[in-house]
Amino acid sequence: MSDTILNEALRQWGVSGNPHLVAQRENHVYAVQKDGTKYALRLHRPGYRTQAELRSELDWMQHLVGAGLTVPTPVPSQQGVLLATINGQNVSVLTWLSGTPIGEGTEITQGTPTEVAGRVGREMARLHTVTDAWETPAGFSRPRWTAPEILGETPLWGRFWEHPHLSQDDTALLQAVRLKAAEDCAAMDQDIGLIHADLLTENLLVEGDRIGILDFDDCAIGYRAFELATFLLRYLERPDFGEIRAALVQGYAARRPIPSEELDLALLLRALTYVGWIIPRLDEPGGYIRSTRMIARATRLAQDYLEGRP
Image (tube, rainbow, N blue to C red; front, side, top):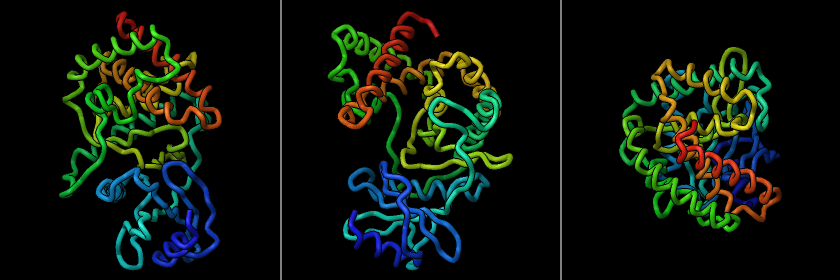
């Protein structure tokens, strides 16, 4: 990342030097200071999101802050813009969200798993309810997570059925479940809207009696059940998965009950997306191990779904 771009971003937002790199995923995120207050300066990955998509992400976050949810607040530059472009690099700044992640990986550490899952479900319900009351501004644009983008010929995260490590039987299984799931997705069409789409342990921060939500990079328009499935999938192999699932659904019932069949389908869909997601990352450290786990999970869910087993 060019020091020239970073230094110009610091100047435009009037924040101090000595930025500290804290994350390097879709964005380069730096911890910076201004008047003794901590902020997150984001240098967005070129080509990953359009400017319209980035502005839409920031608009949604502003709405959520105004509605009382605990999410980072977009901070305007000294020129009054929320998104700047510096030598072709998109830049934004957010307030720093304090708190402790609810856990790490498959572990939930900030309370009992069922208690935390219930709280997360209630916060998801609040997120979606507040969002449904919002009229999106003109030009609003985010990716979609619905049947065509998950199961169509050009999925958002890649053609999962063409993963190079699939056996012939695996490929046939995923093609079969792809057709079946595409027919069944209509059951979820009545509840499509904005979702965070990445509510994992590291993006959910506990502080006192509130849960804060980080990292809206992957927010999208999709099935609301897909939101619950994204959180749950990580815990699928835990012996207490059933209790965690039940607690999450019970918490989310503050907005509406989620039928078991709908959540089973959403879990399958989410598992399939990760098989596509890992394909270009196979050569990264740990890529092969992650890929093996993702394929095993997706094929097991696919077999269960085709056989009518939850």
